[in-house]
Image (tube, each protein chain N blue to C red):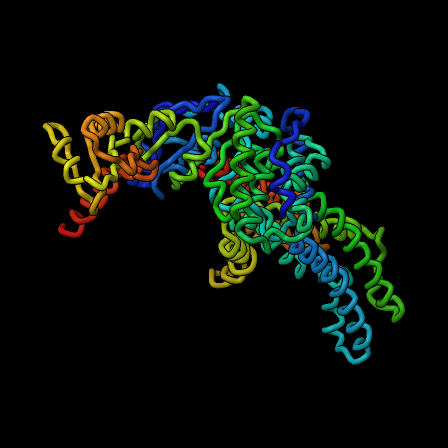
Length: 308
Length: 276
């Protein structure tokens, strides 16, 4: 369980996180979405107490992270910026972290195997590829068998197999009743993994809803119709509140009617239909719609700066 | 990497309880000995501490017959035995700075402070483990340096001095203690500056640039101020003789320990307050 309350962080006169309030619940995967530079990583650093908030507050499992007696058992975190000494081997890195909590070496070996780093565990981390470094970071996050798992852009640098592995792992961890909080700037990845979405832009909360809700809220009720008699169908369907676009010969895009209404109307007039597809806005489009204003605001602001 | 795709479940593990200072110290010990740079710096410090006195003793012994009485009077058996301390302090100081700045430059500090969010146990553990390692290596090194250089000089029958001679044991052991304190001082500087180049430069400025600069001052000022410099106060630990313008060993040692405590204390305050 992570609870942020009016969390705010300034760096100099730049506000990175602006009055964020949200809670991340156990038992589901919660996606933390926002364009690059929207404050996701800063929020995660605030949760871990690496940076102190300018105002507001954030707790993990009911306490400030700093006040936990055994933080690695409470929260396992993977930060976007690398957090490994390049001169140390993977297993020594994990062992050093394990020692702080009296976690035995056998657990380190278990995790090295779990993330598939067995063959390179004695190699210096500085020689690791991005994907291997990411696996090491994930092993570190899972070391303490934590109740809350917080990962910043975990699929960065992973191959497709690794991405699938990550997806299954996250869902499995949530199914065990853990709190799973995963950031990404990729909507498509979150659509496959997350049950709930927290969307931020420019440090502010934009949306906090289930993935389903988020999708339907953003969906545009477009229906794509293919018919050899598209012209007649267009005349038939035309009425106030309905917009019809002829995309190509035989294909219409109808807004304002359901697929059932269109199909029934066509059947009643004996018009053949070859395709009838409700078009759900992709999560990516929904995301763009939501963050659009913020991006635009930014662009306008930049233009203003240039003008001044 | 196909092993990764197979297993997709995190095995449960027993929760092993709270973070303690002892556990953090064990973690820091693992960090210290698992880096190549540590092993090289410490090996260099041991080598320099022992090799320089042996070299100086051998050169002194072989040139003794051609030396003028003035030159001979300048030679001091303890200066020879502890000649390596002045050189190896640089290796110890660089390592002291690196122990903390290496974590900042690589990002490891974020992992360290995530595991130990109260932060101060990390600083104390780093300091304690490093001090213990330096003492464990440097105490034998200065003893070897003393007895080896004496063995070479005594074959020639020159500059012999007994370990039980007043002040000798204190100076030899003081050489090792000085190196421990230099390491602590450098570690504190590293924690304040958080940057390897900056940390080493700051240390070098205080220990190697400041003392000669004092010569610009009028002699009376120089005499009054110089003895308060960290390097000068610390040097009294392993100097056999003390003139009117320097502290005697105990006050010098206390002052140097005070400087170390000051630097470490400032590091501690900043460590807790600053963002990582």
